[in-house]
Amino acid sequence: MGRAPMSETDMVETRVDMKGDIASIGECMVELAPAGGGLFQQGFAGDTLNTAWYLRALLPRETRKVRYVSAVGTDAISKAMLAFLADHGIDTGSIARLPDRTVGLYLITLDGAERSFSYWRSVSAARQLAADQVRLAAALDGVAVAYLSGITLAILDPESRGRLFEVLSDLRRRGGAVVFDPNIRPRLWDSAATMAEVITRGYRASTIALPTFPDDAALYGDASPHETARRIADLGVREIAVKDGGNPALVWVDGNMTMVPPSQVARAIDTTGAGDSFNGGYLAARVAGRSPLEAARLGHDVAGRVICERGALAPMPLFTDLMVG
Image 1 (tube, rainbow, N blue to C red):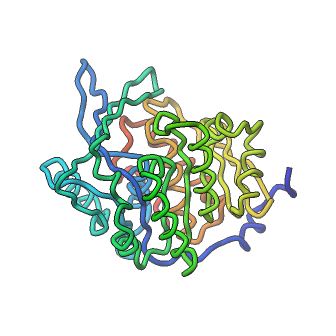
Image 2 (image 1 turned 180 degrees about the vertical axis):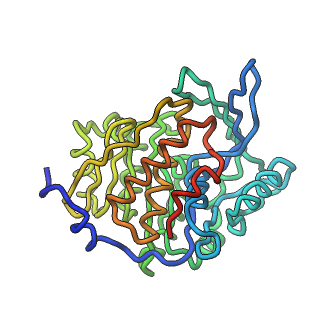
């Protein structure tokens, strides 16, 4: 089960220098969230956008640019989405505008604090975010850290996935970091075999992995978070934080591991975006020079506040006291 549990002292040697822009790659969608009385409130969200949102909330705007890398249409709702992102400090210069496409939509259904989703994304422009490799490479020019998810990979055709992996490989060769959350969603894949193959490739492409234990266990048969971490480490990933809902997160760095308990929450209202917000807190701490253990604690703190709000995007001012960097 690896070497001894790691301490803060152990983590000094694992700190990484991640100066420069941070890019989150994926799909932002129109969100319809329950507002009571059978009504829904329109917003914008999506797993990689959610993480970019919390990165923006936690890092100083004057020293850290957070880019969103995607594609939208040229219709009114696409323009509204771009304005929304820009108004909240997320750079939209790397988002392609495609006149023959629009943006996807999803609807949240709540059962207590737990949520399920219905999606409409067949004409989503984000499916074309890696159709042009030159454009994609330009979108990541000057980026120090690229973040993506399994949903990013799922919405792309095989050729586009290949182009994305090539661009990410180039980024790593020039010293950048690739952060990957598999965010496993079986309904997005044509088969479990394809899903497992592509998610494994995503792990191999990454320097930091942020999986969720129940999801990986269902796909790969892992018996414990420790087994999940070992499997991913065997693919060449040195730093791993395994999320496990309301249970402690397992942080693994070069075979050293420890469990980081979650923040205490009086009453969860909506767990939408919990894992994405943990990722935002974790990554914000890492690019600010904090240790993986400190990063996991911040991730828990952010997620603990998010699940006490409705929808995926909690107001940024709620996290002012947690800012790093």
